[in-house]
Image (tube, rainbow, N blue to C red; front, top):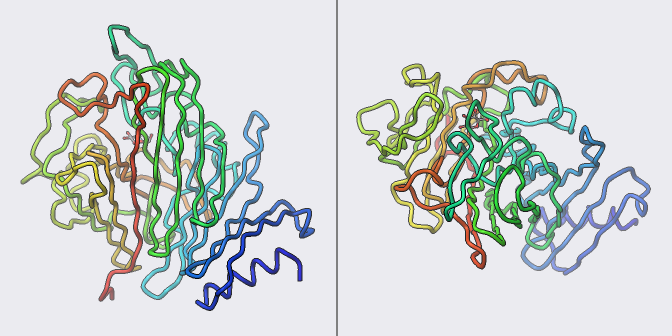
Amino acid sequence: MKKREVSRTLLLLTLAGSIGATSLSSCSSQESGEADTETTTASNDQAKMEIKKEAFGKTKEGEETTLYTLTNANGMQLKVTDYGATITSVLTPDKNGKLGDVALGFDSMDGYQSDAYLKSGPYFGSAIGRYGNRIAKGRFTLNGQEYKLAQNNGENHLHGGTKGFDKVIWQAEPLADQNALRLTYVSPDGEEGYPGKLTTTVTYTLTDDNEIKIDYTATTDKATPVNLTNHSYFNLAAGEANDALDHVLTINADKYTVVDGSLIPTGEQRAVKGTVMDFNTPTAIGARVKDVEGGGYDHNYVLSNSDGTLKQAATVYEPTSGRMMEVLTTEPGIQFYSGNFLDGTIEGRGGKTYSKHYGFALETQHFPDSPNQKDFPSTILEPGQTYKSSTVYKFSVKENAQ
Ligand code: BGC
């Protein structure tokens, strides 16, 4: 048997719960005679994982990109490309055990490079940095010096600028024994206007509890704002519905940060009680979406039980499929974005048109525009410190789903 076949066979044995051996193997296309794929496998008495690696296509500048597929013991799959450390696909089971893709995305680089995608800039599944969300007028002052950032959202700065962390190629390292992929990006001093050389890692782990765990670290050589997040859009109906408005959402937040017409916080943290912003009790996204100013939800919620450790921030339930998603985070805030700017110009996976509210994002984060808001928790990373942040998206099926 070829090495590749051996590792596949071992994986299947593991999935059936019958392994005992310890092994670590890696097999490339040259060895197997197959095109452009490679696997890294690790096993021990408890678990056995395989990370598949394949070509994903070229960027417009001609750089090669790679796609990594992580699979867990339940058959759940997570696909991540080194382009933008982007989650392209999340396969999870529904109430009948049928796998479906719950993440908006594309099966090759072509989708991420299409004119429609680049024009509307939805950031499907990408790592966002150096600063997730908006910085007013692309300016802030730090240690007496004013910094000017790219203004890529009207006069404001959004999601790290014109070429943020979502549009660069990260150095990827499969960690097969942890069923994880670690990606590293070194952002040079002055990139998009930010001070300091920032070294960032994002590690995606797929656990056998059907969790996607995202761990971020960053270090810098000059003080700089840092606010990293992931911009996955979900639709738990996995292609069986044309919008996400029936999803039932809970957000554990008593307050949100009020914004002006350009979505910049005014500084006020307002109570959600008695308003369309209140998701403390499970409520369909679509129940009040039309009453929200600005065409839908696009707001940062102040998480009530945040204390810097992993705490439950939100849950989402899709009644038809029975799928549930829980979001846990160490961050103090979460941006709930109901896909208001999806305008039907993007054709997604399976020929689906991604129109308004097709998917929603729950972006864990510090609050928008913190570098200009004295009463918000600080986002400044100093030399010698290590930025750390973790978020978990946990998938399950609700008991008693009809
Ligand atoms: C922002 C939206 C923006 C979207 C896509 C979200 O995080 O809050 O205003 O349109 O990202 O760029």
